[in-house]
Length: 438
Image (cartoon, rainbow, N blue to C red; front, top):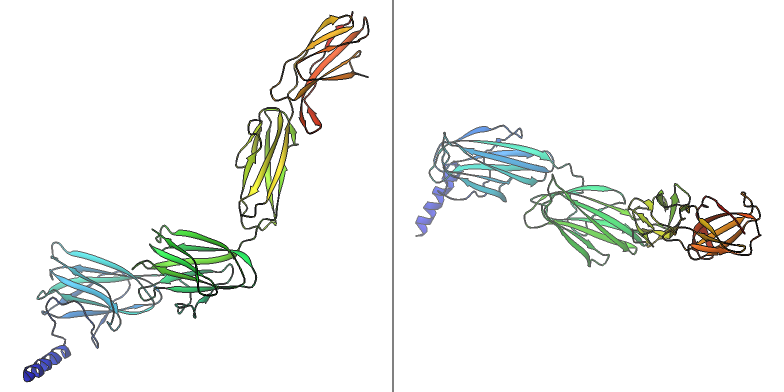
């Protein structure tokens, strides 16, 4: 038995040395010292032939930078064959595929794209069992254009991420995690934007004690449809770590950036018109932020009475009915800062009052009501200019004017008003009516 084993070992050694031995149906495995042809990255098919049973052809692919290598195999009359993609010395196989039933009239094609770091890789083609014949193979490459540190794979070698710096990272088949560190000298609110182009990946934050603070999985991203995630937190001084890693075997690019969130300290409101208007008037309110470089310049409007006047999200106001309404703009950055603006909607001009003789030295005045008015004023005088006129407040839409001068002609007008606190805001006077007192 020992003599048989020694003889078999000698035969295997000779066969491997001449490159003419292979176990039928075996998967691609590590080969050392093989002769490989250069496979260019021009996406042009190169013809190949497996001339003898069990033989294999090897190709060397050199990547100038990190990026995506695409290998396309096309079987012809070899019928059944395998191709694989491995590292340079073939100690790690990234992909292996068997292509069945190829022929000259119906060639079978298969492509595989892998995320690799710069370096040399080996492509191997061999016939399935005793199959021999012709095939084609080609390769293409797309650079990742990443700029992260190549050794940021642990907490201890985490790459420093400076404020406002954007880093493009790349997770390859051999690089399954990237670490970044953020150094804060003072307590501040920060925003970290992670934009994934990896199909499924994780964004993780660790505090200075290497305790996990936050973890988020980003789903269904791609190069053509990246997904962005915003992490916002108020952190104490110290060193924090961000960890990026893929879900399962997904690989690809991402970008990472952090910036300080400058909170709103105060708001201001300006208007294109005075704060006293009449129904039907349109007003534009504009919100200002202090400081001017606040990170988030968004706000929400609220109204004390949207029936009196309505406002939309852009600050466009339409006054509908008489009254006093307060609009409030509140910052949405978490600062809880707000500013209010009071709009007075005065009543419209009252219609000409109806005046009749009520009794001796008295006149009875009637006028139309206005919705939303808090009250009315009636003014009367013995001259058209209303010099030394008297004004009477009434709650309703009629008034009796008494103790007038006998045989004198009186001029009368009316107006509605709204009230805010002790102050009244009247509308315009009506046209004048007149009547002689008996």
